[in-house]
Amino acid sequence: MSTERFSIDGETAIVTGSSSGIGRGIAKRFAADGVDVVVCSREQENVDPVAVEINASDGPGRALAVECDVTDREAVEALVEATVEEFGGLDVLVNNAGASFMADFEDVSENGWKTIVDINLHGTYNCTHAAAEYLKADGGTVVNFASVAGQRGSPLMSPYGAAKAAVINLTTTLSYEWADDGVRVNCIAPGFVATPGVESQMGVSAESIDREAVARRIGTVEEIADVAQFLASPAASYVVGETVTVQGVPQISEERDV
Image (tube, rainbow, N blue to C red):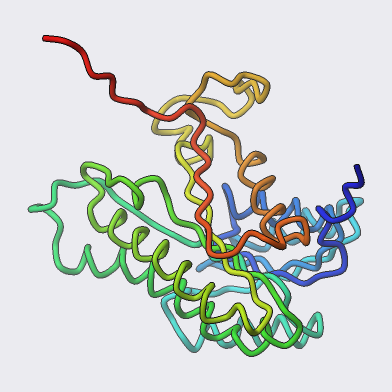
């Protein structure tokens, strides 16, 4: 079996929230496959090292670092314009930028609620809306990021879960609307992933995770990048409007006699 259709060599991608963690991993994976990638985050000094690392590697893809707050529409439009000016177009948009905090619902202030929804949901809207013209020009792909918290809820993360649930619904709706324009829209809902943030909270190092082990509930950044590359590639040509849950062994409630 040929693996050629799993490649996205020669395309141009924007990966938001790519200064670290999942976004950084996807950007590096794409560039190693020959994708010219625009990496962005709210602070230029945080995203510059990612572009430097990619451009110094042996991979064929080039990287451009752009400072961008996805909640700022003007900044998002400038991001898309910089991408097109540098690389001539846009084929893949990965809406990875996100944020969350933990608190009981009654302790979530209106500002806290709006901030989380703004980053996770409105940021996805901003980037996708601003990139629409270029994605439709030659049949692009959108990979949104939700979370298992948006599929089944998560205690102490009500604004995050609500925003991610909305991203899942947006994915389904937009995939229908844009199908006739040749644009595939899909979504990834990760469970626990050993990003630097999760490692600091849970004390689990990515190096200690055995990817061959099936019985686990924490994954690696590389495993999420695998799925992102698949969804962006021609191999996923018949995958439209889906949310792919990447969480390892599911949690199952067993009914017992009492």
